[in-house]
Image (cartoon, rainbow over all chains, first blue to last red; front, side):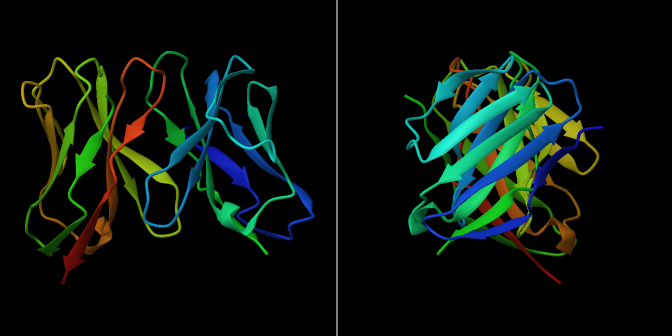
Length: 112
Length: 110
């Protein structure tokens, strides 16, 4: 099973809302990632978790708050977002130390 | 530095072969990857090649690696309309990150 699942598929939120994106994998991977992708552009790395600890934060604004409750789950908490944060948010996972990353289908976020 | 370059667009006729090219800069990259992204979907890992290999074949896909020129290519034989997508190559320098190219949009005409 090489599946990474993400919920919700679509999300529309106002600039004062608080919402969360969820990601789950059952491949036993110990590294999990959040990416942001704008239309027709490559994904941009936001955060990396390794063994449930945050290992990379690519200078992401604090209105994005990641959380890794256990080795299978990854959340991204959103608060006070801006319209320019509208994008496809992708989750990925991989074995630790191996860079073969498996991506979920993404959450299409629209900030109004 | 880390930089991956691809041409932005390729158009082929159904049944022809497609060749998507990529150049990268970091010679420390251990693996090089090809991902496919269909409209509205996530990235699908198509194939990858280890840096000590020259070629890898997987059904209709052939990956060629020229390590001296830091050039990677993906050949799709007998291209079908279902192959229409954006193709990203990616390198893995020793930073724990995937470095993506800008993506090549493959258009397959019937």
